[in-house]
Length: 291
Ligand SMILES: Cc1ncc(C[n+]2csc(CCOP(=O)(O)OP(=O)(O)O)c2C)c(N)n1
Ligand code: SF4
Image (cartoon, rainbow, N blue to C red; front, side, top):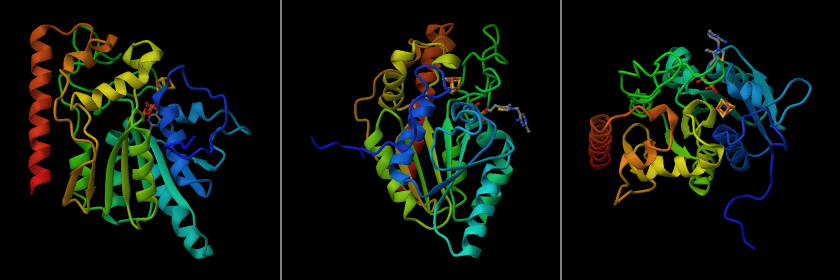
């Protein structure tokens, strides 16, 4: 049988993630594309637990644990060291949305502005999950977290990190989803061969924080794409925007929202408002693709 993704498994069996964790699959697929000659920097996040305690490591590639806001500069330091030694490897910073959208953002922006030769990956589970599900700036509008509780859900919109990073005019930026592994792997293969800063955003449902059954992880990741909540796209040098999966007949956002406890409190008018927001964002994206 011909497989549609590489057969080799680089990450090991068994992990310290919760059952149904989307972030585990994200790393599994990314490493299938990147291969064993990869060095990862990892700030404090769920993945620092998922990987397992010393001396065990799930990823089977070199892994450097760093402070929360330093994954990107640590990766660029490793790249500089490799260059001095005349060695080649994929250098990857792998971080959650809290480290990316919020606390590490200044450092990431600096690394992008200098066009450092690294791949920055944000696995986006839309909150600070490792410390118990606090709101981040990636948390969607109206979601419930421990810091945006049921009587006062999140009032602000999810930060548009794709446009912000695209405006740094880096050579390559892509979004990906664990529900579309072929697309994800293709993008990582492409990113691997590009020199300079590459930014990858992977949508990773989290059963624990989003309050749904672990069996629904892939379904939710797919619905996020099919409802146009999370578009799959690529951007080259901040200018050339392209969808890698067009959604001609989108599903209503309600189909996605109703499966998750974090949106259980939503009233009909809230769902309408979210639908409106998603439609507006899609139009804005199409404008960028046209130009
Ligand atoms: C400067 C700093 N602030 C706060 C923390 C505590 N902390 C450790 S992990 C974490 C949450 C990480 O969230 P995110 O980056 O979204 O990754 P996730 O846990 O969701 O995988 C926090 C707040 C820290 N280690 N360093
Ligand atoms: S809290 Fe969420 S992201 Fe973290 S390990 Fe559990 S399922 Fe994965």
